[in-house]
Image: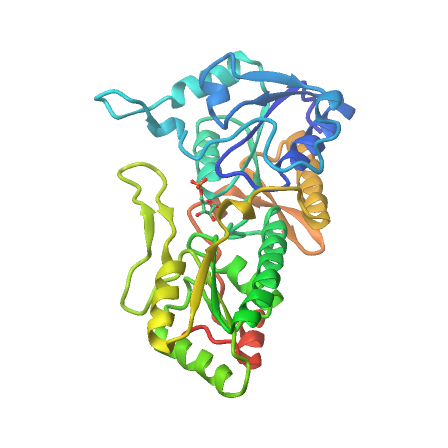
Length: 360
Ligand code: F6P
């Protein structure tokens, strides 16, 4: 075991329920081993500006296990290698400053809790000599190398509850209700919440859809007497031969904003079936609120394992869930990849066997 004295921790990218649980686990585990923890604010901003960090003691993390958000703040627009600045220069490279600040602060390891984008940045810093351990976070569950990310279970739970509520009003009015959920280019939230909520159609980015096939399925329900239907649409899904619907293009920046496909599917189904149809976008509600017990436990295990890897000098790694164990994966083997729903995933096949349409 390395004799670490001081480590840094930061949260980057979109927030996910369970971030605070990881921070708490990191701080408590490290402090119990005599390691001081410095909390860096708003992702790598805490290493760009020297006044954006603070010591975290067990007292500072008491009571945060059940809280959504992150006590450290986060951003998905602060890549130090291409930092957006409002000058004619456009973006600026602050990576040298990050490396310099890391050493000036006498940090000996950096625990980076983030999604695909943040972990890719962490990996780049690792090649520049910062000893990094990554912790995968995203409600989208699309990070390669881990079966689960914390936040996903909470998002699915919330979306399932929303679908349950929509069921009763859909049935009362004999309507089609379309629910748009998050997930970027992966359909995990739509698939899990769709099955858990008993949806009749689930549209995911991995399977481009034909709206007439979805409409046929819903008309068939009408014929046998179920005069309402629930359609779950992942924000990244798109029709055959069509494109992804964006609220905002990346415009040279790091992130595009997906959204709008739910309303399009809603209008198309209304036209195709002649039925009253309504759409709901669950949006950031899926990211807010308290983490489920599953996510609290997973986040706590991730945080504890991240400190263990740092103490063992296993840098350039990411903690991962490989049931039943928490394991280490090499960052260079997971960054740049996304984990999508495979065509032969058992839940997808089970849903198909139950009569759920994926529009193909
Ligand atoms: O990656 C998590 C996620 O919630 C996606 O599902 C969604 O597309 C995106 O973040 C939205 O991010 P924001 O609105 O914070 O830019």
